[in-house]
Length: 563
Figure 1 (cartoon, rainbow, N blue to C red):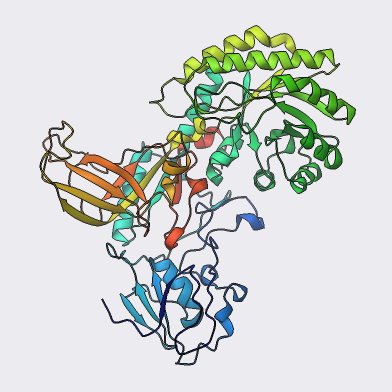
Figure 2: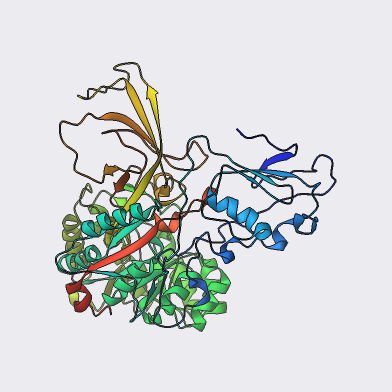
């Protein structure tokens, strides 16, 4: 370890009181998440709206600005040698974030110890890894437009796996180990065809919150779906992509007043409610709204239960419908959500039957309701407990019983996972490795392979990044990383623990998997990473979010006229 200057040593985010020998206050409040957003670029044929500014790499001066308002030491005369500060940093990006405003751009290679002319020293505080330098010279921020759409076209029989392999080789030659996704838009297209075949009466309104990557949203728009938006930001995003307001449902029952006003101003009329206070807000800010009453339903068969937070109980429905009439508001239909990760198809039948009761109550009050929203809960994985076809059969039967085709009721749904879960594959790099001696048989668990050591690998992505689903998504609590090569049956396998890259010991990807020995620089792949991953990712410790490479076959590209 290099000697530390005799100065106060602190981590980013902590606040030292006074530097020894100097009375200057050195409070540090670095900006959070000020860069590394929207990794896949923007989706527009013209200039990008402000909220879709393309991501900036860590080398960009804009990404490294340290706003004066966020650091009280900006006027602390840092040119004086007698001010000495030590910083504990964990990644290249955080080093650059701190020192670039004072030193100018760094060279690509960062040493373990960097002396600074103003009396600063930085210790690159990481005991198990020092990532190789990353160069982004020549990199291109993709903009989806007729000239440069940002989607790679798979022609001449190439597959998404072929593309992934080529990207790994390309990154190896460029000394770039940053994680990335391959987003197979072909999978989304195939899911849509499957939906139309199995649920012909149900129009999907894609849940934007699940995955708002530009290429995904453009594909869904090309498929002529509607969009389930939950906030002003999501509505803005969809309108900026050319989606018309009539294809948006503002599906959130507790909305900020300013968001309701924004919806009104921009012609988004269809929105949900489940309580009287929401009706009062809507009556004051969007009196012409077309309201959908969300009801609570039995979600006991789901991994993520929503009815404890959202949805009116059936016993309160009559009062709410009556109150809406008193306020002069129009209620056009009913919605529900059986919960995410639903494992019981009959939950849909009961919920549709409950919705029929609400329609009947509305009829008695003179309402002419014409919309039924059956929500989400559809899995996008092939290994799910209940296949999509079983859900479809139950839903179709319930619709035939309670809402026959000649009833005049439009049926919509809000699928998210169904479309994108299996479309994304994550590629992460092994940046460090440890070997731990084991007592023989301690971790055998009856497996054939029982070496006397445990392997620990550290990836450049983890639970604070793409794999945040492991701690934030009850419907996706386990992943199965696999090698980017064929594994022979004769190869020795070792019990392996896989960690993420951050300084937090909570950042663990998997506690025990049996795989052949890996080496620093190897790549691991993780499938089914399209749902609630990108949207929940952070840049904690300054580690870059995974880039997204969307691909589609030439045939589908031309069929949907994506160009």
